[in-house]
Image (cartoon, rainbow, N blue to C red; front, side, top):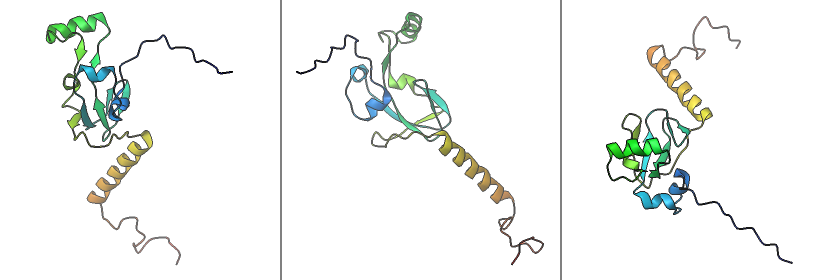
Length: 143
């Protein structure tokens, strides 16, 4: 006896940037071009924190809040409530990269390690490079 799956009555949602990066087609692709970007500083896109160095894709999306749609129509007449990838791009914390560049998410651990390494490099540049290497005459090391 075969088990039938119930049909899903929910409407399809616009695709996420991850789905767009994987080349999956969906409703969002009908809204316009996508843009692959790298975060130059920490910021938020699609309710996700994007850390410096992360590579992700801006995808066009349809606004759903009537107030947002009305405000967007005032600034961009004829947009029909569509926020293009270009309109989402921010020069303050993003730079455009090649569409062939692989998406990359920077996690907290990797971000903290990069910040730690940056601090160490700065200290090494301003202090004696041999500091802490155990080569001092008055070190307490046992030989």
